[in-house]
Structure formats: structure tokens, C-alpha cells
Image 1: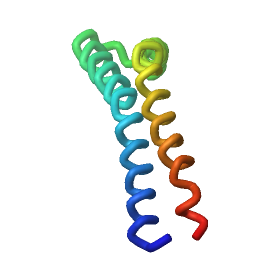
Image 2: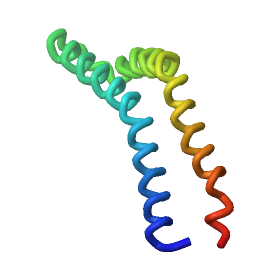
Image 3: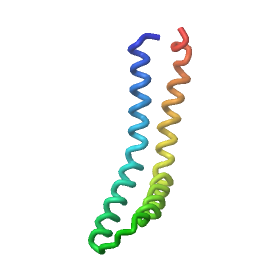
Length: 89
């Protein structure tokens, strides 16, 4: 296994991590921003107000995107295991 193959595998893995975590992080970011704007407009300064809506929206996002996320991870693992014989030489 050459250095180029190792770099390719690591870069594919890191890109997969970014691709799978980005939608959930964006959901959390948007919900936090909306609640912060709401707090600013209404002058509510409760620090814990953002947690429950964020958790609910992240769980909904995981419920909606979980099938796609697991499918992407499965495809990557199947690709790794299919080429396993090449990696040990």
C-alpha cells in the first residue's frame, strides 16, 4: 500500500465525516440563530432557552437524515472491506 492510497483513504474518510456532520451542525446553527434573534427582540436573556429547541431539531434532523447517513457510512465501509486484500500487501 502506497502513501498515495493511504492519503486517498484518509481524505475520503474525512470528507465523509464532514459530509455527514454538516447537515446536523447547520440545523443546530440555524435554530440557535433564530432563537438568539428571538431573545434579542423580546429581551429574554435566559441562557438555557436554546437547548430544548436545538435538541428537538437535531433529533428530527437525525430522524430524517439518518437513513442517508447510515447508507453513506455503509458504502464507505463496504468499499474499505472490499479492497482489504490490497491494503495488507
